[in-house]
Image 1 (cartoon, rainbow, N blue to C red):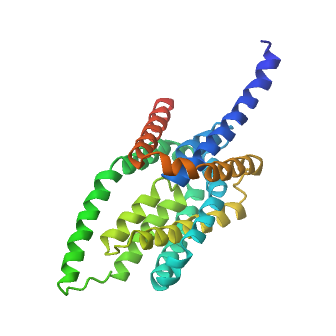
Image 2: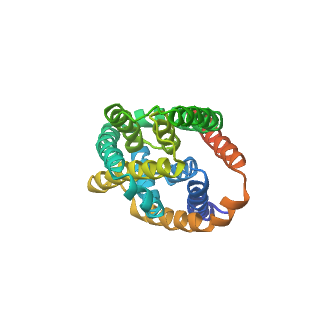
Length: 270
């Protein structure tokens, strides 16, 4: 192959990988979460600056989160006060996280990337045991409730903790969905549909305000963003049958493997 052919082939292969990674990210986000483990490195591979790649990734995956709210609209309506609380926490924390990201030097953020990926992958790794522990806690609370003991979530501490998680969403965000679910369960929410609905509201608004800030600051590279957005949307739609066929432990294991692999790759690069 000539030098000219190599110059044309390399960008083409990067485009192919970007579309494939975004498609797979859409699949993962729909069935287990963790799609950013693939889409963010793929955007970095397009020779983008690290902060721009993260901002572009946030914008690319946000429409899929927006549609998730529709699936839980009935649960949101039945828990409007909690939804308002989580939504405000998402807006406050997400906006601060996005602003801090834009204030972070490119080199500093790049040094943080492998640690952020490692932390997110570790969160997925403990999701199974943590979920089982939370179920046992919920059973105990249900037993105490049957005996007449009331357990009401403390709203101010919940708001503060949700705002901290939302800050992380605005700054990076991978793995935040499970963290939101854990926080809500610890603060006394028991219905899994309610927990999912409140998680979606907070996550969607935290990413949504970051979405606006990144666009307003001109950090989004649209030619890559639109390609990733379209591929992720198709992947999310195509994942419906997979979600029913593949066991959740297998999906979580796949997400952890990808996340740890990407973290290791970035550690080696540095």
